[in-house]
Length: 122
Image (cartoon, rainbow, N blue to C red):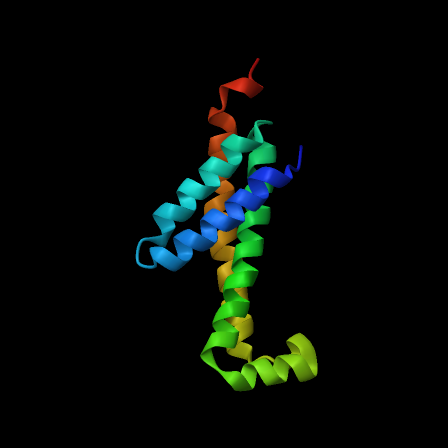
């Protein structure tokens, strides 16, 4: 299992662009980004899965933090004062939802992308 920084960074940028630009059809874009990250890792299905899950986790956390701070100023002030304990329970449920949503979708497609890469079979 290899962790590679270049596919992770490019996957984060692509997933954020997909999430911002194609909101109704974001699942198709996230599957494509997970596949690309898994294919770029070039080390097999397990490495593709792990790198795609790292991308999904990072993007899920960024998406939750951005939506929390954009929706209300009070959440931002409570976050500064109390840390993650000051956020509302709905924000925690959104964090869990985004983490599961992004990790499962991108992890499975990353494993498929790592499997289909022909360089790791030789």
